[in-house]
Image 1 (cartoon, rainbow over the protein chains, first blue to last red):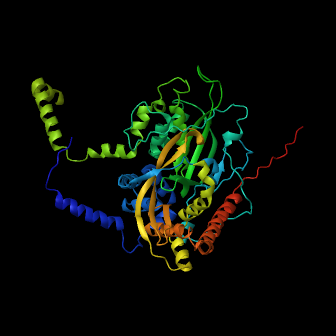
Image 2 (cartoon, rainbow over the protein chains, first blue to last red; image 1 turned 90 degrees about the vertical axis):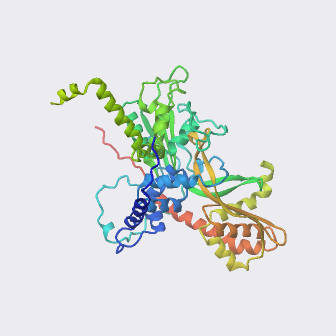
Image 3 (cartoon, rainbow over the protein chains, first blue to last red; image 1 turned 60 degrees about the horizontal axis):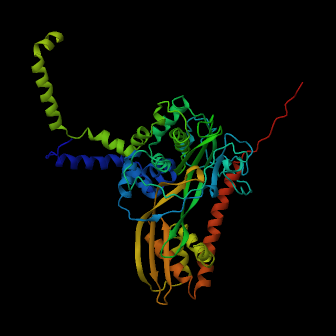
Length: 362
Length: 151
């Protein structure tokens, strides 16, 4: 518990004024525009939208500027803004099978309809600092090829004729929404996926990595990873039909996991799923691994006590805004709390006989 | 829903096109085509959100991913046509232009608006998509197998 204390008003005002000045930095250096952040720090913008749970590149760019590049602070700003918006409705479930892919790869199947398409990736770069970027911003046009990609079906859909891969049958149960109802256990998969898609990237990555290292091992292959744009369709009640109201970028990852079978399921490949706003494949792969680990119960696997299998542990600690809020509140004044702790320790020492401790100290 | 699909197909298509137009583009094309008619707001432009859904495994049960900002408005022309707009982002001026185009497309100016606004938008959007597809296609991997000498 913390107690309100007065007297800091002038100090706070001055602190905020200085913050604004520090945010601007050296005035002889040109100021960043929102458009520059949106266009040139796109992956930061994407992370803020994904974890802020609101798709709006301009707002995310503004939040990054305001937070001086502190992405969790930016996510906090987006989450706060989000709560002020009236909700007009919900979209139709987006059809990622119809995605216009910028990137689409599979680590399990070499020859697949639509092909392996690398897109604008960091993979295969040498990770050497490029000092040309420090000089001027001129970049040559990317090469083009006159070819239509055609349909790019999901890998699991067309390679499952043998029934060796678990299916995800169509289902239209309305999902729970953790932004409307408090997150409660047990959490069904739809709720877990919502929590994971807005979860902290670092936390999700760490958990996913732990499953690869043996804590709840489920040996994942990236069956498919795709990044591209998908149309957003919404039913408009006053019109009585569905229209496209926009288009967003999504990253989708489907893992194919070894599965020896269980009491309820035959031996087959099972699947983990990741779907994240923007271009964020590290997060999407991590989400898929953690999703798969959390499915141990419905697949009849053993709970080996791994952190990534513990739904409550994962979901209650994955949100960086909740975590930051509770973590950082301990820096706020706790004078009365601490005073009472101090009194308690003094009292205990008196009762136990201060002399004993004195002796030990000498 | 299903039986209204066909009769609304055309309107669905133009409303979808208008929603995906770049900032300021619909207004610019509209103003170049004609002087804006008077209209009455049925719903002044307002900013809100839509919850976006995906499906587990791409095809399974739906789940909530996060929201998206949306601007909507509705207006009516003196001749009675009602125009609606639901567009991505926080763009009140764009929503107004889109609703006007939607209303005008239902009246006597439909042909002029189609030629002056919808067709250029279609061409531009197709051009942007083609350019992207061509860059994507250039990054497609062409596997070849090295012949391996067997003794």
